[in-house]
Image (tube, rainbow, N blue to C red; front, side, top):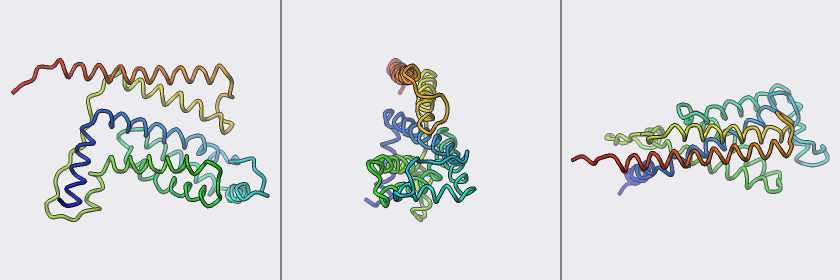
Length: 225
C-alpha cells in the first residue's frame, strides 16, 4: 500500500467519526479564542508583558513593542487568523495562516526558556497541525503528483441546531474569560467567572444533547435496500 493510499484511507475513516467532527470544532474554538486577546493587545498598541528589560523575555517583547506598526501588524494578523479559523467556511485558510504564527511563537518560547509556556504553545501548534490534517484533501495535490488521484469528499455530518447554539455559547464564554487577562473587556470578578463557567457548561450540555438527538434520529430512520 502506498503512502497516498494509506493517507486517503486514514482520512476517510477519521471523517466518518462523529466524535472527531465535534473535536475539530472544539479545536477551532480554542485556537480562535486563544489569539484574540493577545492580538487585540498588540493591535491597540499596548505592551504584552510587565516584565522589565533586565530579563530576556521582557527585553524581547519591549524590542518588539518599540517597532510600532510591526507590533500592531502582528496583532492584526493574529486577530484575522482567529476569526478565520472560527468559521467552517474559512477554517482551512485560518489554519494555514495560524500555523506559521504559532510555530514562530513556539520557537520563541523555547528559545527564551519561558516557564511552562512552551507546553501551551506546543499544544496549540499540535492542534493547528491537526486542523491542517483534517483538511488533507485540499492539500493533497501539493503532496502527491499522481496521474489518477482519488476524489476525497469532505462531508459535514448532520448537526442539530442545539449543537450550533452550544458551540456559540462555549466560544462566547471563553472569549469573555480570556479578554480580561490582557486588560480588555470586563474586569475579572467572581460573578463574571462563575457566569462564564455556567454558560460554557450549558453550551457543552447543548452540544451533547444535540449530538444525542441526531444519533437517535438516525437510529430511528428506516433502513432501505
